Length: 107
Image 1 (cartoon, rainbow, N blue to C red):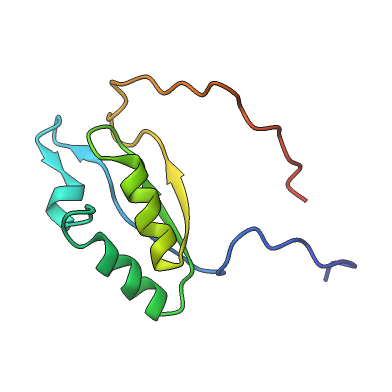
Image 2 (image 1 turned 120 degrees about the vertical axis):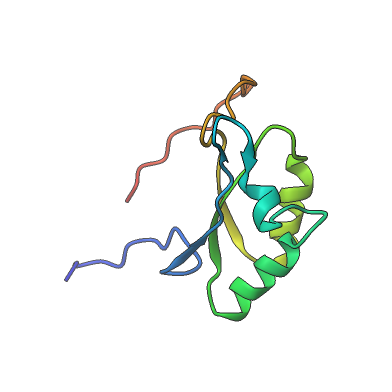
């Protein structure tokens, strides 16, 4: 047992995850297959996760889908999202951050 309580980084101990890969040499988009897009069932997916007591999800911000709409959907659902930026070869577009946030120690 630790002599101190570490800061909680995530809203829930168990995290839900949504696949966002582009597989089979780019011919199979998992976001379309699963309906996990803003125009389809993304809000429903987040609501289902939240209703099961999970408050943290892993999801993807991927080229070809509007990032702001995806961020807003997670916020509106009340879930904390951890985003990956390149998943299964969707990295044809270079991501550039004008200013990187300062590093924070883990504990």
